[in-house]
Image (spheres, helix red, strand yellow):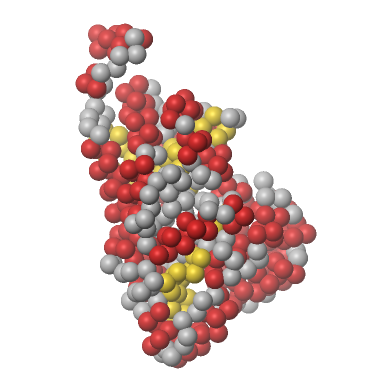
Length: 413
């Protein structure tokens, strides 16, 4: 009680000395467990520990976000919250925020001027509920990328593709050489292929009509049917062993020349980086599938579950502040392969593919909301189930799949 009384007195006089706070072991949960992801998480942990006093206690959860989210939510609802947790930027924590279980960061955000440097503004908007801020976006991760191994195409005697159509045209020669054309894996990866095709092959206007407006006529349009047909073509390019494959294992197939390409978000760059591969030489990237230079503004954000201990709250705010700092943004995003949420930092050290992404995001017309920002968790789950079933069942027709898609969009929130 004496310590708390002293702390209250110091706070009242606004004279909080560095040594007055009790050090906290802050458990941070996340699903960054691949080689590249773990290296990026280590950057954050070391940066936090270097601040002194409080300590980052790593709570990595093996598997993808699909595996980790239910565990994270269950702990918070069960009264065993972590100190901080990674989730996707968007509506992942919407119900937890509405239930009053997340720490309000509005005062810190206003003090540090987050709205002045976080860009695009939709990132911070995604953290808001009833005007208050409940999360910290730490990067911009975009799904709309294809990663290719030029050496695989050269070995097959095929030209290195510059867009999706050329990739499809080169696929038969890859197969002749025993090279998998399109590396992919479990359900969310297949769902990601569809997301990318909707945004890039369907185009910006169609994407916004469907995702933002929930326009069932757009979902039933001939333009949308063409997207479903492209998705059907993609399932013919995957190998039978894709089921159950982790995303980083699919990336490894591209790295080693066993596969020609992979449609995957830019977090795949972390794997190329750990392997010592050079962008533009050992591997190449096709943002927007080489068709439309469009990227969505999804990514990762950190939320801070409420805690009755004021020292934990203090440590949470300290971490939140560090996550948006210039130094952390540069070091973390270079390691993660993602783009920074700040537009006022020097990213000259970024590789050729990251530079492409930075250039694309500089034009607001190229920026789209992510599906996590546009659809509720329930609607996202329905769409993933449909896409997974369609990809696995070649007897399901494009027309049947599109009809179910229309139904999902017409009921989406």
